[in-house]
Length: 282
Ligand code: ADP
Ligand code: MG
Image: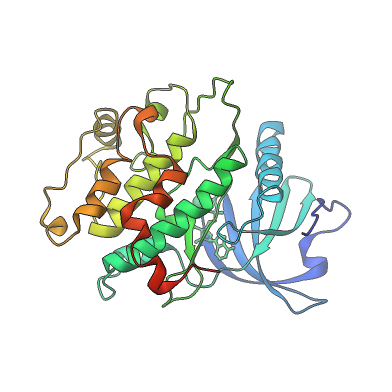
């Protein structure tokens, strides 16, 4: 276990060589970097802060990453703060966003690959839920592949993650319309089930390349979400197994109390399929 404390007496460039851009999100710009002392290849997320609320958000992301040690969750390596900037140094994940696999027409995502991805996603999220932490931003941009060809992934971006206490009445108003759960849109209490909805959407997208709630406008998308209006009528689902459909049907349920939990997902027929043949992932 690596105990990371934020360094404020020097900046990332004092200890690391910063390289090319890996990706951009809403809050951060992520660049490849190399630790000078060890030659280790890592990723540096640069976040600008405007005011104390922003700063608290970054400190929250840091605190959450520190507390989550799991092979399916991106690990923190080092952290820096100067003036109005933070830099989080993290493991480097080389295979690109899972999102790219979905939109890449040359690369057909087989159902077997989807099982592999979904099992790992549920594994990582189940661990977070045992630690009483909600991810709250599950989508294919926040899931990275370890290699270009392989089927191993890591969950990233704990920027919206929250500590969760079942006794608290936690409500949030953020996320990505296509992936966000109805209780978020309605500003109702959220729970671990809120992540499970998003996993249901991710799974739907992986299997079909289609987004179940996408409307002509953001307003329409959000309205489709709150109505929990979706189906398997697209022809992309003709060749998909009934177990896969059952799995999604148990996640895209409007009432969060009736949704399958992360631990139950791992016991579902669809994810138990071929575990024996492929073995468990390291
Ligand atoms: P934001 O909070 O702004 O959404 P993310 O943490 O999601 O920032 O990072 C933005 C993008 O940068 C990701 O979608 C991904 O493409 C890339 N990225 C993030 N972390 C890594 C990493 N450890 N290794 C490789 N690429 C990364
Ligand atoms: Mg992101």
